[in-house]
Image 1 (cartoon, rainbow, N blue to C red):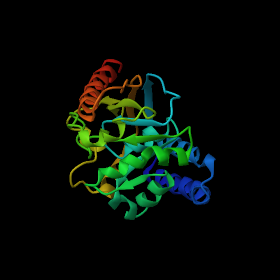
Image 2 (image 1 turned 180 degrees about the horizontal axis):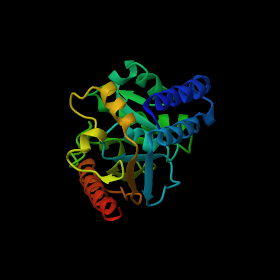
Image 3 (image 1 turned 120 degrees about the vertical axis):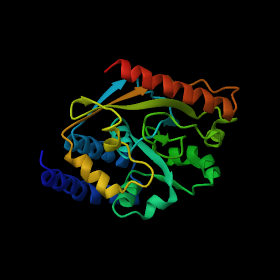
Image 4 (image 1 turned 90 degrees about the vertical axis):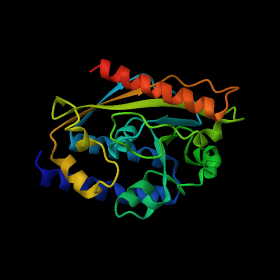
Length: 250
C-alpha cells in the first residue's frame, strides 16, 4: 500500500470515528470504550502490523495491565486487544493530533513526578466501565527494545492494601520488519525513543510493508501480602520471561 494511500486512510478513519467518539466521551456513554478497538484494528491493517497473541485475556476487573514499552505502536496493538485506557504524561495532552487521540482513548494524564494520582485509578476504572482495563508502563519511558528498563516501584503503590485491583503483566515483542527478523539495523524503524522526531518516525513507519509483533499475556498475579517492591520485581521478571517466550514462538 502506497504512503499517500495510507495517510489518506488514517485521516479517513480519524474523521469518521473521531466525532462519534468525541460525543460519547463527552456524555460518558458506556459504549465509548469499544470505538477505540475498531479504530486500532483499522490502524493495524493500514500499517501492515500483524499481532500474535499468546496467553489469555482475563475477565477480572478492575484490572491493571503492566508491561514493557518500546513505541507508540504499542498503544495501537494493546488498544486492539481489549477495551483499555492508558496512563500518560501530562505533556501529551497538548500534542497536536496525538493529544486528541489520547483523550479519545480515555487516557489518564498525570504529571511526570506525581504518581500519587494513580491512587485514583480504581475509581476512574469504575467510571469508565467494568469491562475496561488501565495500561501501565512501569519503565516510565520508551527505549530501543533491546532490553527491559528497570520498573519504577513507586507505580505499584496502588496495589498495596488493595484487595480488589488485579494485575496482569504483558510482554510486547516486535519480531519482524518487512518479513525479515528484526535486528539492530531495523530496530530503530519500530522503536521510538530519545530525541527521535515523532512525525519523521511515523512517516518511516508508513513506508514499511509489514511489521510482526507478539504479545504475551501472563496469568493474573497473586498480590496478597506483597509490597510494591516485591510486585515490581516479580512483574519485570515475568515480562522478561515473556519476551523470551515470544522469540521462541516466532
